[in-house]
Image (cartoon, rainbow, N blue to C red; front, side, top):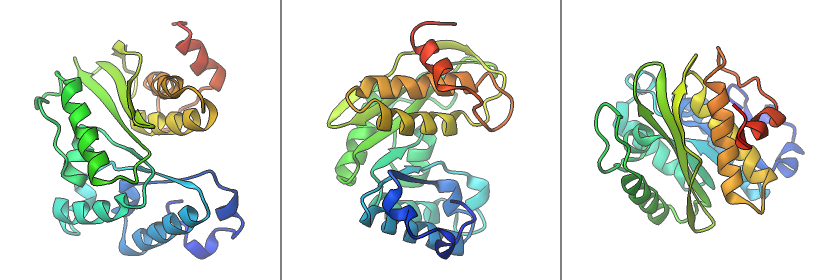
Length: 230
């Protein structure tokens, strides 16, 4: 909904939507965009839709409007409306001030215990969260990463299938494709939280093999990868 004003959204959209999604990048685009997005989050929530939010932080977008301090102020306000929160270790630290213990600067060592504590802290600070997810990207080189994710949902912490040695054609959109996959998974695999997370990781794994910002794969292709296809 980036670029839309509230009055441009058909009124019946609020009652028909299952999930309303926006991101930290949207919140950095300007005061008017930010106000409209927050107002829509409130309206969708009042109508019973889940609110999902990717807390992705881009320093270049915030530096002229208050920097990290302003980003944390905005994102902490938004967090009180969010049901499904996603971000990587840098996003949670920069945008919400929640540190991850034991992560080195090179992102070569990502301790599960540190991420688990980060999620526990996020849930304690924002008890409205129904799900909290973070991607785990362990950097081996510019073109080879280990890839997996954690998701806290319904009181339980799930660790996805690990995708070690993922060969990367284009990293752009990896987080977005994970978020899209997670939304789809939570809506589709309602009785299998682990499968919902594994779907998101498989979808984003495939996105790393595609040039550009969009994940041009089918559900069948994602599910085939989940079943073990190469």
